Length: 183
Image 1 (cartoon, rainbow, N blue to C red):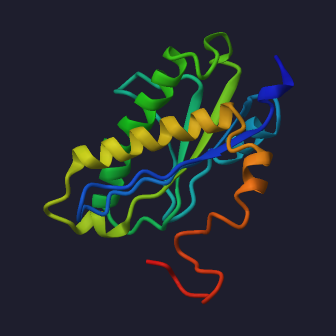
Image 2 (cartoon, helix red, strand yellow):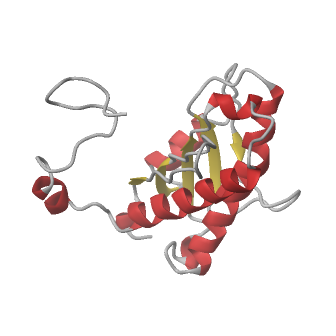
């Protein structure tokens, strides 16, 4: 196994349709199951109150490869939230992983040697929204996960890009001149 897949990280944000609050912001780690990513993956197998972890599966008895574990970024406080995580979001993450292998972004021959840890964001208000567009929740998580995987596997953005944009691009939730949120 090439050490180029020892420890790769990626993130992406895909915004929801107007008024949905279904923005997706996965942050991922991809690496060899025998290395630090594999150790972190194994350590996440235990459960912590309010942070139910689960494998990405496409359907019953259809766990994806590379093995992928989803870790929520927020404390889970309701079964409705668990149903979103274990429904449209789990499906989107699983499909994005499989499609990344099918598209050659993740090397097919290494699918059993790699693992993915995906920290997943679902806005807590989604669980209480009776008009939630579950298709949009799937869409944003699928697109964001595919993009995060692509970025991890290509080491994007490059350090040159980051340096070039250091004083041109700012965090959407922090204005460095005023110290306030830009939203």
